[in-house]
Image (cartoon, rainbow, N blue to C red; front, side, top):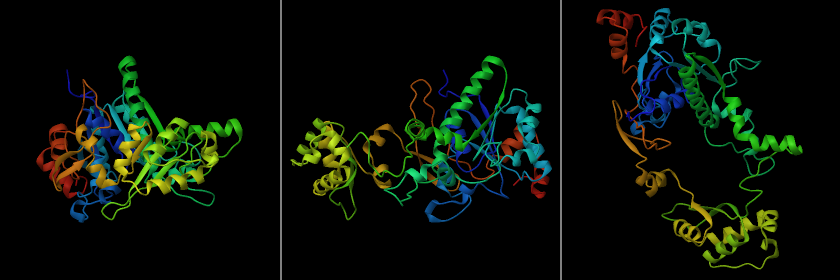
Length: 405
């Protein structure tokens, strides 16, 4: 039995930045052969984004890019040139899947749209993922996940009250959409296995992101309420939030606590060596109604405690609680260490570099990070010479013409 669930699947990956590369990384780490088609004339913006190895910028020194592109190969072409597009087309019969994440006009302008490519491989599966899909009045609007999080409504509900707009961290929808696109590609592969037919997948980040707002959207349709910024407040739990603990080594420390019942409330007070006779806190319903007051009360108690010690006491008492960890804490987390979550891989320019492990652990086909992310054009010779049978002279001429970098 193979160690890899997706061994034998071939992917030609034209995508850049987040959604496409994260999607194909899932496949690559689980055995698929993925060739990234990149450009040195217009490199992936993540290649020039921090953090860089030793804080030295460079097109092959970004760990941001590296984390999304493990287990892949890289070729460098200038797709603005007809000869480069012809080379890309020669790889299509090899590919089971083609992935791209440009605005809709790009691949069509290059003659690399689905209708063109399926002439080269009739059972091809192609995924196009962009901000607002391939059709509609805003299809050609470019953007990034930060902007899509705003358009999708996440900015409106994340904050601490009226007039507060506190965006979720990072390019939020870039981290939602790959879960949907990877699953959809697996479904397309299964459909082709059963029918012999490929298909085209149009996946808009906009539509994918909406799935994570389903409760708010359903509530609006049912009640007419428009969800606004709630901070950490919950309709079912109180206290429910992050509370300051005793500082350690000059750093602020916090603990996240969620209390669902009267029994848990009493257990929390016992762990904090405190009690309360305030009628506002007497029942779960009263605590939810007086959430601001209860946050102030609980915060006054946690301030005297060590976050990790208090977590242990609360968990032992049956209360949901965890310390609020920073990046240093996560790299030293005992549970992640037991999981073997962190992987150190040898990168051609950055040397030994840390990578996040897989999102899952399957018993029969566990997968693994097979290699560090490639430097730009790392696999040009293998792909052009071995797969496309170009001679050394032909490759050299194409380099002189800036078709291959």
